[in-house]
Amino acid sequence: MREASEIYALSNGLPTSRFSNRPLYLQVRDAIAQRIVSGEWKPSMAIPNETDLAREFGVSPGTMRKALDLAEAERLLTRRQGRGTFVNDQSSQEYAVRYSNVRSRDGKRIDGEVEVLSIYEATVSESEGMRLRLRARDRVHHIRRVWSDNGKPYLLEDVVLSARLFPEIRSHDDASQRLAVLAQKFGVLLGRGDERITISSAEPDVASALHVASGTTVMRLDRVIYTLQGVPAEWRLGQCLTDDGRYYMAQFS
Amino acid sequence: MREASEIYALSNGLPTSRFSNRPLYLQVRDAIAQRIVSGEWKPSMAIPNETDLAREFGVSPGTMRKALDLAEAERLLTRRQGRGTFVNDQSSQEYAVRYSNVRSRDGKRIDGEVEVLSIYEATVSESEGMRLRLRARDRVHHIRRVWSDNGKPYLLEDVVLSARLFPEIRSHDDASQRLAVLAQKFGVLLGRGDERITISSAEPDVASALHVASGTTVMRLDRVIYTLQGVPAEWRLGQCLTDDGRYYMAQFS
DNA sequence: AAGTGGTCTAGACCACTCA
DNA sequence: GAGTGGTCTAGACCACTTG
Image (cartoon, rainbow over all chains, first blue to last red):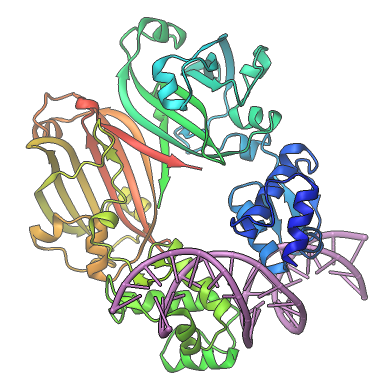
């Protein structure tokens, strides 16, 4: 059976071969990801059942299941007993806010309004290159935007996006979108992120955008989000007011 | 074969029965946890291979593997191809610091010295009961301690431990231990935690313990750590200085 | 009743570690 | 070379959802 899957993969130009040492279930997971990125499987769509998929990929049901379980753990799919397997819509409320860790006093994620202050494309600076693992002449997009809750500004973001992954960010509409929404639009699958939290005081331009006095104490959120493959996709510096009981929520194990 | 496992479990007083609907691999995982908690399997010890264990528990190798993989994901075991399966030592450096998310400028977890300022046992307050899900007359241990890095205090902790899980915390030696070390000593398996981060200013007693001026801005770390079964084990309020480039590290996906 | 994912079985062979 | 975990196969039956 193994040959069948590899012949199938080869016939579809997938990155596997008869001589690949990469475990089959990972190759199948990659093929699943490819179908989602390419749009062959669209958000919210039900995909074939695991028996049919196993036959199609030429692997055993057990291997197919292992690949599907992995894709579910990576938030590509959702499986529901008795119903089927569905492609996750990364632009839905549930997934779009998953990287947003600031909460209001009541414990809910804040779903505020965003205003884009500026967008421009440039060559990476040294510090950006370090965080995004880019080379000297690579291009990046810069976005400055401010989030408000009930009309009151609380978070200023300076976003840096790799132009390799996100070739065209021009409109204010694009720049106002959450990363997960842009990623789905550009066929990028997102994975882990890490965030460094410190205390700092607002420079005049930041303070002015947040409607507070210069030097006001803010929570500084320095975050990098990586693709599923581990490539840095976004570096964001957030400066957040912590009045009104707003706080950062971290979970770990 | 299924009967064999359940007869085995029954004969050992494990919480399963012929009529249990709980999946077998979860029952086996529970039995693994029980052997670790009871001390039958000691930290750093190699346990039998999966074929032998499957026979002993009366389940198929596939089910045994699923239970072992789960226990590894829960940080109870470590499996190494070609070597064997080992019980994790929760008091080792690697595991003891896993809930410590404050880092120094160089990105390393700070391995500082701790001084215990006070210990006492009391009945839960209302706010403690809320966070630790305890009833009105339950008992808790209070510990106040300060962490220093190269002799310089940087973190004051007010720890509240459920006395149900940790019956006797009397010595300063106990009170100075990290939670993971105490948990292993008391046969408690730890799981997830969550931490809320805000900015506040140090009250006089806190400021004095940290050798800074009263009112100094600190990072407020409000954390609850749960057992593997989801029972709150510890509530800790940390107040941390963020000079010298110290920061909180959050990871998510 | 039909279809789905979830659990479970009973093997086989491979990759890795170590004496 | 012996022993370990990692991968893979090819089924079976169960629990759940929906028409």
